[in-house]
Length: 336
Image 1 (cartoon, one colour):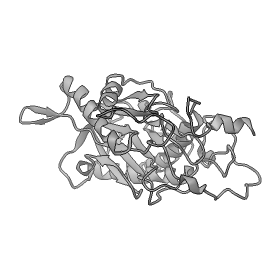
Image 2 (cartoon, helix red, strand yellow; image 1 turned 30 degrees about the vertical axis):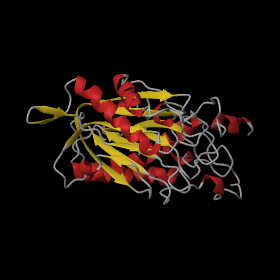
Image 3 (cartoon, rainbow, N blue to C red; image 1 turned 180 degrees about the horizontal axis):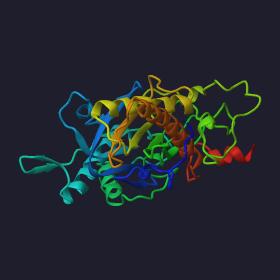
């Protein structure tokens, strides 16, 4: 099966989704909001040992709520959980939410990554900025959005390089689209040793993250991780995998599990005890296609490949900023 990217190569190639970013460059942090045009089936899978989340229990298949209104990826560690309140406020203003006896309650699960030690000024006063950043991100949601040093990826670091916000999409032969969005902030490395070659290279479409392929021969330090990046609870890669296929909550859970394969393909090592690695899955159903056994396997395979590409694209697109602690991928590649 051959994969081809969608027209934007972004999460919003999945019909029914919009994405907004907001950031504070002084603090070096930000928020990314994913808004569903209509309530969408969703689930989640956590495989990291140090997650930070809000309202993820409702996404389990055995719980009663079937659909959500939005998802949030935020920097700020536990402070960043406030971002979902800002997104809720924006949705409430629009009359969006789960109807509880005439009261609309926007359902907005969220996850955070640690970006508190990245060169930004964290002296924000009494209250952190995440509620307002969440509101701004929701209000700016559209089909086009920036990746790299944007939104939840503004303050991300990736084991010797700047991290970032990545996204990618895949259109399957039957017309179903699967797409990924990811805040790349792992303990592990996204490149082979200290080279600019991405672990995700086998899944690259065209030259979407440099077109370098793999180094030959492989460097001897390919499996080494710098000890200074191993800090308890100080990392995490958080992501969304989305499709326009018609899925149940149980099959959305399986989609989230499959997308974690992309973490393992693009990050070495992934899913450590000090990462909070998490994937939300969302299915808008806009294609009207209910996958059968064979097409479901294709969908889950594409989920892993698309996630790997999104991770590489997030780091590849990172840009240099004031007070950076680590170089960008472009700076490393320039020395190739």
